[in-house]
Image 1 (cartoon, rainbow, N blue to C red):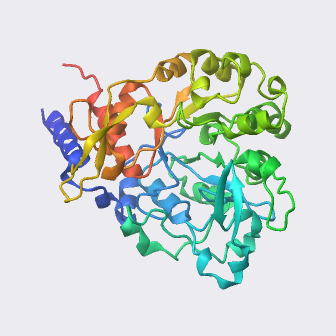
Image 2: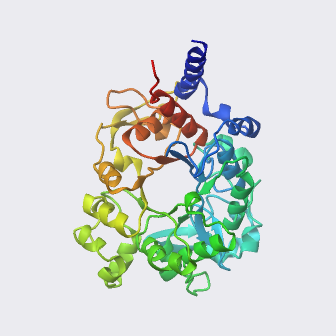
Length: 436
C-alpha cells in the first residue's frame, strides 16, 4: 500500500507540473537540470522503451539555438538526441546554424569589418538579403556571437545574446562525448541544410561556386571524430537526393551505415527543392530517384511533399534508404484557424489561434506499417504554437507530446526538452499495467 501511494503521489505531482501548475522555466536552470539528469535511467541506445526526445536546436526554448549552451542544457534536461542544423563555411567546415544566412541568429550586423559582405542571394528559390556562412572562414565566424532568433516570443533568451560562439559539428560531437557518462549515451540528429544549393547552385560573394557536398563533409567529420555508432545518430534532410546519395555511395565508401530520416514540409504547399532543381535542369529523374518516381505516381512541377507520403512511396523509401520520417505536425494532425485567438494561459494575451480537427493523416499508419520511425516536428511550449483539442480544450505542449506518443510516434523534436521528457514519463506511467 505504501509503495502504491508513493507512486501515485509522485505521478500526481508530475501531472500537475505538466498541465500548468508549474512553468517550464522551473526546469530551465543548469543546476536543477544537472540534478534532474541523474534520475534518467542509462540506456543503450538512447531513449526509454523505444521512445526518444529530440532537443530541437538544443534547448532552444531556453537558450539561443544552435549554441553549445543550448545543446548542453538539452542534454541535462534529459534529451536523448540533440539536433544540429549544418551549413558550411568558406573553408569547408560544418557549423551549426539554422540557415546559412546568419543576420537573424548572430551579431554579424554589428561588425563593421564585415559590412561589405552583406548581399542578396537566392536560396532554394527565395531571395534573401544578409550575411552567409559560405562567405566567412571558420576563424571569421568564430569572432561572431549568437543571439535569440525570435526575441518577441522568447524575450528571456535575449539575456544570453552576445555570449556564445557558433559551434562546429566537431565541437558538438565533443560535447556529446563529454556528456555521455554514467552509462548514459547521448546521440546527435544532424540535418543537412540546403544541400543542393551548397553542392550545385550556390556561389560565394566573389562569384565562385561553393561546390561543397554537405553529405560528404558530414561523413568525413563523423569518421574523423570517431562518432559513427548508428544507435547514436540519425541524419535528416528535407531533400531526397542527398539522402539517397548518402545511402548508396557516401556511407558505403566510408564503411559506415547510419539511419536516414526523410523530412517533410507542408504536404500540399511545398515541393522538395532538389526535385525543383532537377526538373528545371532536365535531369534524368529515374537515375536520380530510382523507383521513387513511380512510387510517387510520377514527378513533375506540380509534385508536392504529399506525393511522397503515400503508402507506396513510404514502402519504397523504407526498402531503399530511409529508416524514418519527420513530418511537420501540422500535416500529420491538421489544424483549423479559430475565429478569434484565445488567451489560454491567462497572461492577458490571446495567442492561441488554432484548433485540431481530430484528423490523423494516414501517412502515420502507412509509415509505421512500413517499419519507419516517425519523429514529427516541432513541439513548442509557447501559447502561439499550441492548439485546442477538437472539443475546445487548450492543449499544453506536454499534452501534445502525449498525443503523439499515443498515436505511435516514437519521438519528436521539441524546443523545451524537459517538457518532452516529462511527457514520456507520464506516458509510460499511465500505460503501465500492474498486477492486482
